[in-house]
Image (cartoon, protein in one colour):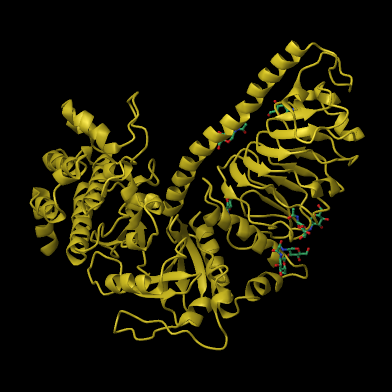
Length: 632
Ligand SMILES: *[C@@H]1O[C@H](CO)[C@@H](O)[C@H](O)[C@H]1NC(C)=O
Ligand SMILES: *[C@@H]1O[C@H](CO)[C@@H](O)[C@H](O)[C@H]1NC(C)=O
Ligand SMILES: *[C@@H]1O[C@H](CO)[C@@H](O)[C@H](O)[C@H]1NC(C)=O
Ligand SMILES: *[C@@H]1O[C@H](CO)[C@@H](O)[C@H](O)[C@H]1NC(C)=O
Ligand SMILES: *[C@@H]1O[C@H](CO)[C@@H](O)[C@H](O)[C@H]1NC(C)=O
Ligand SMILES: *[C@@H]1O[C@H](CO)[C@@H](O)[C@H](O)[C@H]1NC(C)=O
Ligand SMILES: *[C@@H]1O[C@H](CO)[C@@H](O)[C@H](O)[C@H]1NC(C)=O
């Protein structure tokens, strides 16, 4: 088993080395040199990577979709099947794919015969499938696709099965006429108008069409009006026992009226459903985004060519110098170096995407590309970056430089290798084989976070909320080689002044604080609240916002649950099982819990200041003992 691992690691390393030397062709040469036939086609790989990087999912596509997608007739990529080096099947059903599909991404997968994306939460328009003449099965049901069914789908010459049920599609059904079509389902959408009178569409059963807003035609036994009215009128869907095409006429007025009323009510239901869905979906999206950010570790092996879409920034005529804060690193690289370098996506959040960028000089940096800040002036951005860049603290990630243009804002910071986020350390790989995070380590992590945050509060006294985005995903923990000593860095701080409105701050961690929810004034105490939540996460091992197990009630807020348990004197029930065995430390754990509860007080004024919090943490016994053993 070990041997196999070593072998695949070697392959990856060899590929990376080749890739570096000639980023465009080496990867292909590496595989073609051993055979006559191309084992895969780079444009197909590019297309799949576009998909991988546009959606999130619960199966680690990023880690899995690396290396070549096809090796002759087989694939090591989850959900991909190949034939003669070409991708022929994409089957990614039920893996919580979320987001919208990149435009036209399938065009270059010309031999695709089967596309399965059903049972996910994909949104946006249906994929463009023109060109794909070999496509037989298109299974896109149980998603959140909206818009109309593209007319191009009727031109797929080999289409065999089209499943679009359970989406939010609207518009009319285009006239599918392919004699190859065996399976067809568009039920549970918002389609309207007549079912086209093509032989093939007329032969599918009622369940292929049912539960739409306003479809009519023979298969549904709902006759269509002879002359379609300009706008779909509710009266059309008045049920009629006979299946003739002549609309119900000559009924008395009262009946027509009541039918119309009922029908109007019925027609409104989908809109209400959509509205409720949109509200709910908005929430879901935020959660997904948070998850995406939490997965931000550089664990996948493949190095991307460049930061996507960023190339166009480069002006070949003149080199754009970057200013560096670290005077020991004068002009280490310029914008062109950055654009030419290999980049790897570490995470995508609401604030923007984060990349790990390996420069040709060997230097590795982290680049954050900020989104939605087009109104920001150069002066505002530069001032804030200078404030942040000139700070130095061992528990803050060092900002090295920045770049501003109207369209792009980049923040370049130091890369720390071997780091994992606190979120990953606490919550990932729970179960067999997990190395428990012991109490001493947890306490030292807490102390370091408190130190970093206290420093931020003291260095930026004029800023409303100096960090503003403190959560366990924005805490990097780096274990020193062969030792129990950890270094810790806070990331993603200082963005609040860059955001145009309070609305846009909803994506920051401080939006979870009661004062934010109530629309009240924000202060440093919002950071203190976020710190308290991290404390609770470390003590309980639970993810904030998740349902508390063993409890019928659900608490939106971890602190509510902890407060309830502590008030009922079951205090040790809250402790993470991984630290429960350390009985001698229970006192300290409960002291820390008390600090956390003080920090998460509903009233900002009642929460302690960070300096006071830090002092109380430093006074905790086991920390003193632990630090003494470190010094020995
Ligand atoms: C791929 O197919 C070619 C041609 O049939 C063959 O020479 C080569 O060894 C195959 N490669 C692998 C990895 O199976
Ligand atoms: C298809 O591949 C070609 C050649 O690699 C590339 O130029 C083109 O942009 C690709 N098309 C799409 C839609 O990705
Ligand atoms: C991807 O996952 C599949 C199982 O789903 C596994 O067989 C394959 O080896 C993985 N490929 C890589 C490159 O990790
Ligand atoms: C791949 O499979 C196809 C059809 O099954 C076959 O004709 C072809 O020779 C196979 N190619 C390789 C390289 O094994
Ligand atoms: C859909 O996917 C979920 C996992 O995401 C799975 O539990 C469920 O059984 C799937 N449902 C269907 C109908 O395939
Ligand atoms: C789909 O792609 C084709 C080819 O690029 C293009 O002509 C067509 O307009 C696209 N259709 C839609 C609906 O965007
Ligand atoms: C169409 O999909 C719906 C919803 O999943 C299902 O109940 C119905 O049986 C399907 N009909 C056909 C003909 O596949």
